[in-house]
Image (cartoon, rainbow, N blue to C red):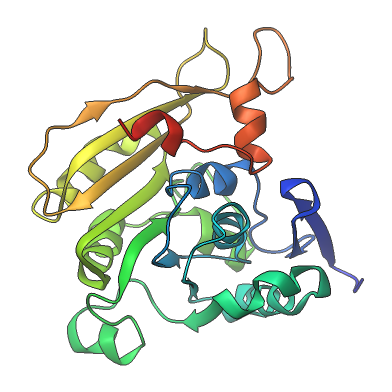
Length: 260
């Protein structure tokens, strides 16, 4: 192992991530939860926008053996260097043929986006974990960490514009964010995706939600649904609930609760 990087085990040893130990973004349970919104028997092509080291994408291929192809889309050359190390790690060899890396800016539009490799109608599912902290919430001199965590005006609109362009007519999008941004997300989804299913994520059942997962289908006219929540921890304990442990370990998914 090289200084300033770690090799971290996910899904109980089914895949490994090479991650920066100090600088930049380190993946955790948010990525595992995001990946779990993909159907268990998903067979298509998936794009992980803003993929970082590839945590969510690898979590999908680890749980969904019939997936055809996963593209990790990242704009930071620093984070891409770790994604490439993750892809070539010997313990990830079983997934290598189904994974690819694309260096591209998610906020591009039109011809520039296509030329960058984000081709219209080329994916069946898009997942994303956009930055959702304000500059005031995340004061840092680490440019890579700021890039991964700090949001900017119009972020959800630009990311969801790209998602709507690159998924096919029957495609879906899944994203994770803070509950405080739900209004902005709904505006950005309007006219692009419908049939929204919102899953609140509670640290404990007695506490307010700290994250939301939103899954939506392109051009759907179905009504928004608030789904049963995911509760992460047992009350008065740091022990994961059975559902959260299953998701974090790659043995179950949020799709199980939203497919009906």
